[in-house]
Amino acid sequence: MNVAFDKPSLWQRARPIFGGFDLPLACAVLFLVALAMVNMYSVGFDHGTRFFTHGRNILLALGVMFLVAQVPPQRLMVLAVPLYTVGVLLLLGVEFAGITKKGATRWLNVGVVIQPSEIMKIAMPLMLAWWFQRREGQLRTLDFAVAAGILMLPVALILKQPDLGTALLVMAAGLYVIYFAGLSWRLILPVLTVAVVGITLVVAFESDLCQPDVQWVGMRDYQKNRVCTLLDPMSDPLGKGFHIIQSMIAIGSGGVTGKGFMQGTQTHLEFIPERTTDFAFAGYAEEHGLLGVLVLMGGFLWLIFRGLQISAQAPTLFGRLMAGALSLNFFSYAFVNMGMVSGILPVVGVPLPFVSYGGTAMVTIGLGLGVLMSIAKSRGLMQR
Image 1 (cartoon, rainbow, N blue to C red):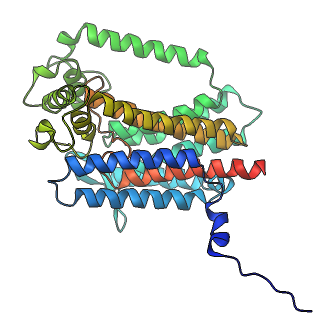
Image 2: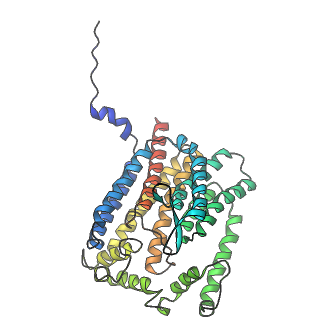
Image 3: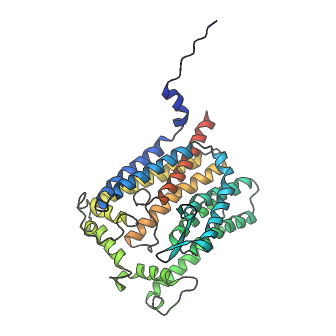
């Protein structure tokens, strides 16, 4: 007896790959990508091939997201310890054989030049989520102490490079996991109290503490200068305060509706030196105004909110911790970048996701989104 089998169509064969993708999350990403490409066309039009290279980097990040989304969270969890270990070893390699650029030793040549600290933005929450998954149901204070040690080792190595911006992002990613794992407010409140008191004292005694001959314990001179420049950028308007002053002028001059696409004077007359990288948001705000900024912030809130929904619905503790930490990572990126460009936070070199030009950071963002997609797909499979 002959049995005829219909040959499956291309879509039927590809459907398992695309099936389960989280549509709201994908739409949020594409919305931000569209805004980012429009802005890069304007702020980078006289920077040679920046627009096309930025588009290539975004496509690479989306490709990484697609590939990582195919990996089940259980397999990602297996990679936690090896990836964390490799990341720490590479950071130690930077310490002994790193490449120095502009006074900072952050890069390592392993056949290609890489920045190992970027690996820790993903490896850190992955490692801590793995740790708490193993300790599920029997968490003690000692387990949180071990987690703090896992977190502080790479953060200390990154701070030594020095790279305050990346260290803050890695620390934030780890702290989000520790918080979602159930860290008691009795341990959080004392740290917050010390931080508030310290900030209050610095603001109150800024004129005395920012004198050139005053040394701040545990901080390098450049870190002290960043804080002092934040408090009074006009103290050195043509030097340390130039970037932030010009950035605030650009944002303020945008008004409610902005100066219009390609019409930003502060941007195109090159008063904003890093207008395609860390200060790309200033050019965006100048040309699109308050309304455009609200649209951009709405895109990030959409992405973050959807990520937290994925976290709440994840079938495992590992998935909940990873999705929650990665979602709030986007909050850290956006809050710190917009804050430093607006003059409410020190300038620490944190890019704005999708909007700021950069290759390594874009791939890291793609990795994080891929993990979020993977967790969302696993939830869909569990429900079936």
